Length: 229
Length: 229
DNA sequence: CCAAAAGTGTTAACTCTACACCCATGA
DNA sequence: TCATGGGTGTAGAGTTAACACTTTTGG
Image (cartoon, rainbow over all chains, first blue to last red; front, side, top):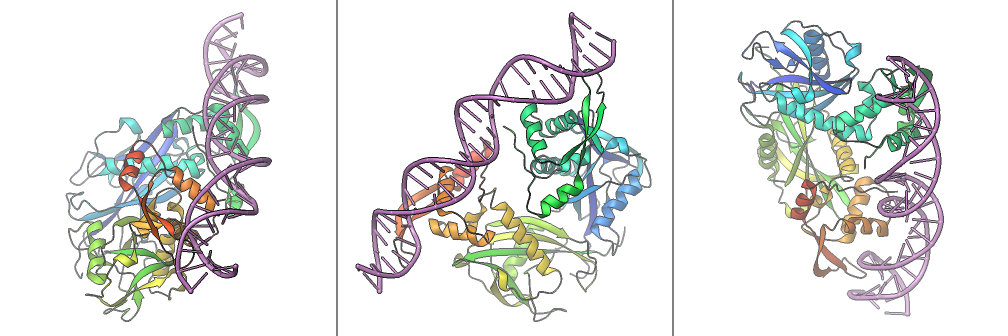
């Protein structure tokens, strides 16, 4: 109890969405036993440092990224050999970001940073593949009952972006008409009035998610909730 | 990073249900800065000890209790002063038990153990009130989509037990007929054929929850799901 | 005028909600 | 026979699911 010698790390699983694919942010380790390998951009918590501060700091230090959405995911510490350096537990966080709005840069412990498509991930050291799996599961279940999908899109988006985002995350087909009807019924999207050309075909109307309105509604008992046949 | 000196604790929030009330299991501290105060029956994780083993061990050591249901709840580590002894993070667990089937006994660090009714809790030291609040929130949301209520009842129960359990947990009225219809529609309850006298009035039929059947159904895509008007 | 993606409505099936009376038992 | 809690059905409202054609644009 006096000299416990367990170390505490934090590991962010940051998801990004772009062009119909889901990505994870990884860094290449510059030092240590996994030098040269791709890993989650985490690290050790400092003495007297709050956990949420530690994740944000590591993320910023190693990748130059600051994300708007970060929530605690799970604490990994049942496998005491998860890290070869000793008994280290890791508090994993789920982060969401829009890759287009970020300028990733490798720093400190990282010799490289990159986005990896979720179903083309390399074999990662430690239990990092497992941590990512947990993150994906959380994301998949949470998009049903919280409007967190919008954190993966830019501020302005076309309806089909949202549709495809849900298709990609859930890995299943969804009915365009029913989806649109349901989402619009919440009254949380505003048309900007602009149209956006999406390559070919008819341009789509540009929408914004009204976060302020959502907060109000939520605190008066509203629940975002969407199901798929 | 070498001498990080953060300590790691685990704290179980064990709920028990009896006679229409929800209880929490607390111990009275025998040693330390909070000597004589009621706290969650947690403690420090040992070197090379898995987290889930640590919670179960602390719970057993201090209260003589072994619970069937234990899930990781949340890791508290944003307030670095949550414990006056230094920088200590706590991984909280949610436990469910049936008080009638347990023989609580104070041991090791505990000079006393007891069940406290959820809305008559004393002021607890550390952030233990906050941890319990988180546990209750989890319990309240989880009974909607997982059949964990049954872990709070004995193996055999009368329908009104289940009804009252939900009423107590959710702190709202529920419609008896609609509730019964919905629960029975899952086909997960079996009548034992017996009747149980519940004090006065007509005796109720005794049911058992078929855990085996639930596991099967769940793995083939079934979701337990119940809402209340 | 062709290809591509956006935008739109209806119906049937199902689920949810609200609601009140009879039944079995013990005192 | 009374008090107490157990057991039961239905109709209207609301929600979900399934499904295909027209519109706008660029090439």
